Length: 281
Length: 311
Image 1: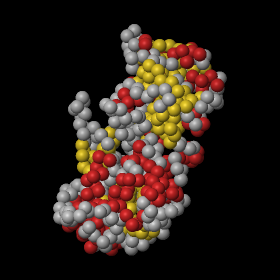
Image 2: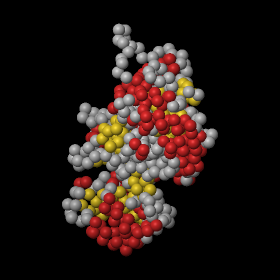
Image 3: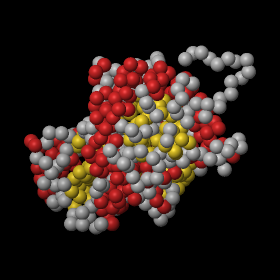
Image 4: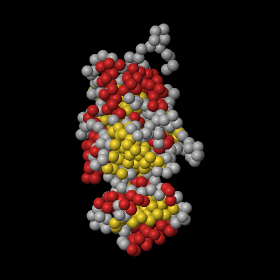
C-alpha cells in the first residue's frame, strides 16, 4: 500500500490546462522569464514542484515530448505561475517563440517540493546556474516561516547570477561567487560553508544545479550532521511516474553504507524532484 | 448515440480504448477519471524483481520517442499484494501484462495469475528476449511463438492476449500460430527496434544503446501489420502503435482492429485516451453509426483494385 505521503500526493489534482502567456522577457542572453495566467490549482504550486510543458512547434523545432520545468514563482492571489528557463535545446528554443497572449498546455503542479521543519532557525542554500531558479521560491518560504536564509549563488559570470535581488528582498543574506571572479571552485565554497556554519549553526542545506556542489553539501552534511534537500534534474517523458524514464539510483540513508548492496532506482518525477541529500547516490 | 462497446472474445469493453502496457500507472488519476477507459492494462510484471536499464532510458526523436526502460518490476508477490488491490478499484477489466525469459517461466507465471480472481485477462508480452533462443524475442518467429503460447494456454483458462513484436518479417504467420495455439486475441504490436546517436557526444542516446521506437513515427507500419494480421486470423486484433487521436483510432479499426491501445500519446497529453473516446462518439454521430464495431475491417478498397497479396 502507499505511504501517507503518496496518498496525499495522489489526491492532489494535476490537471492539464491551457495557460495564457502574460509576460515573456529576456533576462540576459541565455535566460528567459515566462509568466502564465493559470487556474488556482496550478497557482498553488509549492516551492520545488514542477510543471511539464508542451512546447510549441515552430518552423525549426518540433519537440515531441513535454519538458519538465521547475516553478520559479507561484502566486495564487494573482493566479500566475512564473518560469525562468535557460535556452538549451529544442524545447526551450521553441518556447522562446511564445508571444504575450499565446497559450500553451501545462501539466501540474507535479512532484514533491522543498519542506521546512518547524524547529529550523537557519538554512543555507547553495545553487548554481539554472538551479538558482528552482531554489528561488525558498526565499519567500523561509521568510514566511521566519527562518533565516543564507544563500550562495554561483554562476559562470555575474550577469548569469539569478534571483539575487529576490533573496535579498526576502531578507536573506546573499553571497555570490563566479568562475569569472575565480571564487566559485569547490574548495572555496567549502570554506564559505564552514565559516557560515561556525557563525550560525546551519539547521539544513538546500541545493540545486550542480552535481559537484551537491556532492560538497552531501559530504559536509554527513560530517557536520546537517540534513539537506537536493532538487534533481533529469530528462523526463510523462512526469506522472508512468514511464520510469527519469530514474536515479538512490540509497536508503537509514541503512549503513557497508550493508547497502543495492541502490534503488527512484523516479525523479514521482518520488522527487526534491530528495533528501543523504539519499542521492 | 453510438454504442462504443466491443467484445474481445468473452471480455466486453465499454469502449475500444485502453492503455498500452507500461504507459499507465496510478499517477494518471491526477488528471482524469480512469473509469472511463475500456480496460486497465498494467505495466509488465515479472516473477522476480528487476531493476531495469541504465539511464538515459528515453530519447526524443522526430514524431516519437525511443525507450529502453528494461521492464523494472517489483515482482509478482509485490504486485499481488500492493498493485492489484489498487487496480481493483477501477471499473474496467484488468489486463495483466506478463513477461518471462523462457516458455516454462511464462507458463509458471500465468499459472499463478490464473488463480487470482481479480485478473480478468493475461496479456503475454512475448516481444521480450527468449534466453532459449539467444535472446531473440519469442514473437520474432512462428515456431517460438507456438511453443510459448501452447504452454501459456495449458497453464491458464483466463482470456489470453498475446502481444506481438513488429520486429519480424512474418507477423501474419506469428499471429496465425498464436491463434492456432489458443490465444484469445493478438495485440499488434510493440515498439520498433531502433537507435539514435548524439552527433556532438558521439554516444548512443539510450543507455542500453538500442531501444524501442514508439509514437506517430511508427503508425503506418503498425496499421499495415494490423491489416495483414486481421485478414489472417479470426480472433480479435488489438491495434497498438502511434495512436494520438480519434482519427488514428478509426484508421486502426478500419484496418481490422477490434480495439486499440494508446501509449506514447498519454505521455504527451495525459488525457489522450479520454479525448479519443469523446472523439469516437463525435465520429459516430457525424457518420451515423449505431455501433462502433461497424468500422472494424471496413476499409473500402477502390473499385478495380484487387486485394493486395503482399502478406
